[in-house]
Image 1 (tube, rainbow over the protein chains, first blue to last red):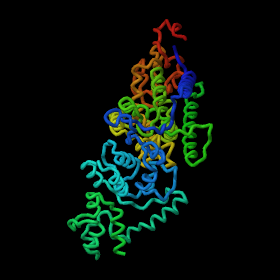
Image 2 (image 1 turned 135 degrees about the vertical axis):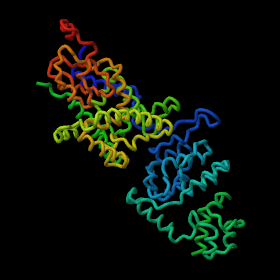
Image 3 (image 1 turned 90 degrees about the horizontal axis):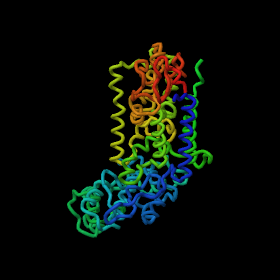
Image 4 (image 1 turned 120 degrees about the horizontal axis):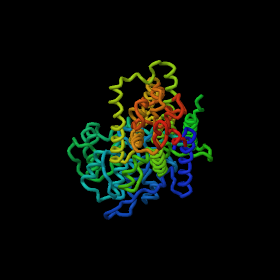
Length: 245
Length: 280
């Protein structure tokens, strides 16, 4: 049997659109995520949602509902508490933190949720904001040494939020955040050591009072010390900066 | 006189359809768009997405990021068509292939040596590249669970270059592809397309094949010159070449000047003296 051009054209269109129509009618055709992550197939977490399957299209509200994490906690972890945007999606982080040295994006949300809820996840090269790390450490006391070390090595200090990706209302709020966290005015940053703080004129006694414990070797980075001791780096940083001012 | 080019009409139809859906998606994201047209993502409408998600689908029961059931369904439909007619998706449906052809028309007018710039020896080696791309893309996607191909996918860039969806690297690949199309017909299809590499395998077992009647052939080689993939149709009685895209440009309906000499059919041409048995 010979097939001519016209018939090939007709058959292509008929087969494609009949196939699509049939699967739509059968309820199988879907062009977007059903917003239900995969579950663990085995082990003690069997049946629980797997954070590794959080998609960039998930809104933070949906992540909050699916994994039973308060929305405020998620917003705080990713520096979004002043944005008040319920439509904000996990993938939007990439745009918001476009200037960050290391990518903060959907992978960061996956890792945060997993470690916050103490769920298994493959830790590779995903970074978290410092406040997210602090929240995890405050909430999950069962972190392994390996996970603690990972967090220590994968912490990003909050960069300036890229205003180009925000709407007008968000931009105004972002300006407020920026005003509050102008890094230039701050003595203590992510890599600041105790020695640098001492050199800036803050006494050892003042530092120990803020820490609530003995100060370690002065060459140690303050952030590393906070991570080791389970202290909130944000709080310590703010207090030290305030002493200097 | 040759018949009106039905294939061009089908190509325009799918190109416009995908273009409108992409624009509608952008508008929908901005709070606009129209409801009578799909606002699906390009990934949801690309059958190759179905291929790269198969490993995850079978081992984890999930799709890789950005891929949905629609891509798997389209992949299945295209496989059915490939079993029947070979890679008709490439020759009739793929909007990127269509775009390459349109640019190529300008190249054909500009250069006398169009589609013959690449030395044959080099061309033969380069044609293996798309199989390497296929293996790399499928392996890396399966291992990572991410749609890595969209970082270099010119199809995705073609219909999303105006949005953040398009990776800069993919836009560069698109520009290179379209520039090369001025010199070589369908360069992406020939040398780099992983989906074309996969669909091309169907040329070995497709039900309806391109066949040449050696008894009536006048060896004018017009079929060779019309083939966008540079297949030498005049040298074979049946085209099994993995590069064939089933565009039917070589057939007696298009370039072959002798009626019923190059056809797409599922049976062989009858020997001399028994031609009437083949008239159906």
